[in-house]
Image (cartoon, rainbow, N blue to C red; front, top):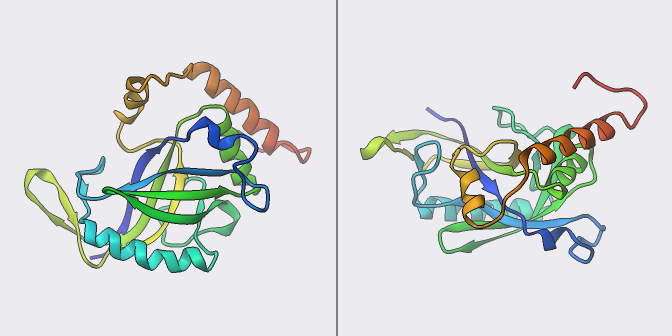
Length: 202
């Protein structure tokens, strides 16, 4: 039976990508990063064959060309993309080995402004694919995603599914002061959400 399948990876953005000059024609920031990896056991214990991802990326490129490849900030367990929560649009996709890499434009929506503020302040975010499909048990406790899989979109989320992803950044020599960055992020979120004169409960 088909179910909503959510897969999350840490999204690592090079700081140079958020400086002046790396922007869309509309002036919005552009970032690039790995969106998915084929032929490995992911953080949810699932395995995607490369030809399955290749098929879905080829189909999704039509969505990209039609200017419809949007995604949300935080994903629902739903197959519907809620336009009020959209924060970005994917402008291009390509393969780098077994990795699917994407060029993403951060939109000047409420959710997009929050995403940009988080990235600007070094907060680690995850990028999460959302699709519909069924699973089949494999050896070693893995579940193989079946041929009925359908990719819906990618969302940005707060926590990568694999806790070890945070340590990977430290191993590459890129450390953050967690307290300072999360304090900054909270302040920025409050400023954005309260900009109209009323503040929701945060």
